[in-house]
Length: 231
Image (cartoon, rainbow, N blue to C red; front, side):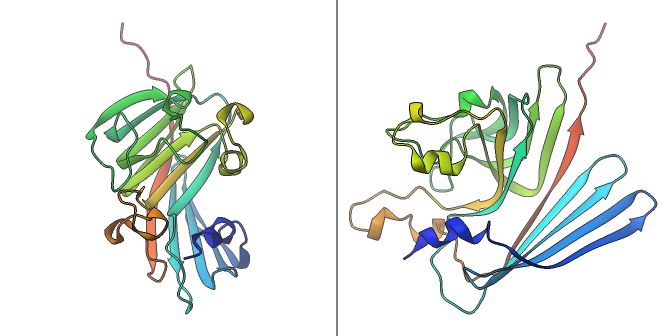
């Protein structure tokens, strides 16, 4: 099961079509359709931009004919400008969760991006939150963005890229970026590792993401204004 092929499948887009449409006097839509040559699939994204600054993001995936390894995740990654360090979310917490480790309670939690980094023996995926209805990133003045899923999301926010984590043997070898890398995912595979006889300790079948199924999800992005203190 060559699960590593998905590492480069997403970044290597072969864009086939880009369309810009005027929906009405205050709304525009940008659509992008692309092939994913490494996996023989197609992917499409649509951004509907409204006059109040709200952006609706829609993503869809259609598999090809080849039978491929399961996906590690299905979602998007946003790079958020420096300074938006305060993190809050409505979902499971306060500790990290995955779909086969969803033991935390659903609630509203507040933290920072740095505090949500989980230190393991070596750098790896960490800090994910499951069943997230919305997630907010704000700066010291209270301004920022909020992402709200049409369905509950998996969310991760950190100051390190996936390449940083893969190349480093220890956390101190990584350079902290001022930007925040925000993952908004429709699905993430489970952690697995519950026994010593499954191949490569992969997650059990219910917690995998089959690559041969069509998938889609959507979320909205909206600006957050600083709350004015009541007199």
